[in-house]
Image 1 (cartoon, rainbow, N blue to C red):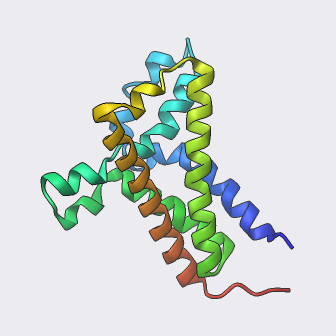
Image 2 (cartoon, rainbow, N blue to C red):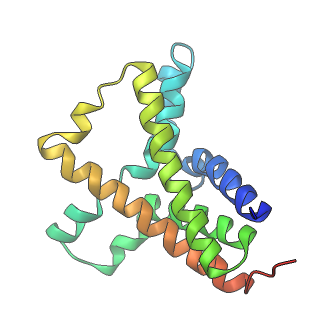
Length: 161
């Protein structure tokens, strides 16, 4: 049986993943949005969802390992997304499932909109950009699962009716 809390948590998390750019790193994204709003609305959506994958955790730890890395705005926004989804779905297992599903769906939406708008996706997965793309995806997954775990722990176990 499908949990309605799980579906609602994933939908709310996806909506918050578009809006999280305005919660934690508004100065970076608000400079670029007016450039594309009148000409290409899909590019605006790509910017809004793609900003969650901008932080590269791999090169961050390779260059200067520090615990302050976890205060990056992108990780904080994905922790927030996972926390909101974890509190909606209730329970640690459901929180982890919902938060990881949100990031996977966000990646798919980001890639689909990039292909539709004509952006070159191969540049993200070649040479130097490959490490930063994988690092961005890993940091988003890490933040969302941490937030889903916290949200699921705080709300308590999931009750079956």
